[in-house]
Length: 451
Image (cartoon, rainbow, N blue to C red; front, side, top):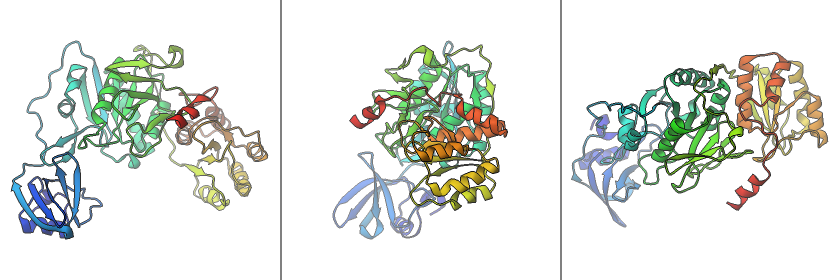
């Protein structure tokens, strides 16, 4: 059995397949001591796969892992087809009258082709693939597609944000909007980064992802991608937004401002929420519905001149304040020549008193320190209690109601523009891309509790 035939199976699992003459893609019947199952042997991920389970796609559409020690009999019912996707033989023809939208892929599962014979999930890398995966797109827009990266989102670095911002700027010159396919884990970081790097946008930039991959019946990939394309082509706004399911069902897709969005659940389809601000809009029944007044967002204007500022300083850390924390944690960052530090403080923006000497040292060495809160809702208010006042006196910059991850990205971006201490402070206190609101919504916390 060669590598393609085994597709990630190792050890005992691979040996059981070889003994039965079974390959990936074959339809099999597996008898255990308790039951009998029929389905398709599907590939295993080569990284991190154990060698004790066979994975079968059942007729119900769900995948089942069966430990080899439980298998009494494994037999092939039908020979499988190739796991490689068959691509269209011809390129889709541009349709006159439809707007052009650019779709840039950075990785993740948002746009994937599924071989339903084998269950294999393959990246949709071209316009041809995208039209095949989501044929509805062909009636909405003409697509320019490009694979910029093929990375797990946790591996995307500030240097990738810079490259992505530059490429988005180039595509905006020839498209009505840009859609970015991105893994969900760090989607909020990238949306914040682009919000700062791409200023005075003339057209929308819409990031989207999928909580559930295309091989699952409950996948959100197609609806999120379609909604993102609709928002990019029809939306009246010119901002960086994130398009993800608004509700667990397929009723609508929310449009979150790129600096105010957080992933709040590991797996729910409505995991992304706008925090400390109003939801910008939604896509429902194929139309964009803005949920804020026109004065609350930047309007689309193709004549506006984009300001590209794509430089980020990666040597910025986010430090969570915890009981028992001592100064050597902060000292280690100073010793490693970090250029900026964001605190995720407790409550209104506090750290233990034990950090004060190290905070003074950081200030003496010219390292900007920024304070956010661990609380999801609300804003830092550092003149209420003694600790907050002492931190302000030592030069810590209050980040108002910025999300900690947004403050981290913003400080990276600010330090990419200037190292002047006073200018850094002024930038951090200035609302640049909707990251700071004048007054935090009081009703949002209760809305979340009610849900």
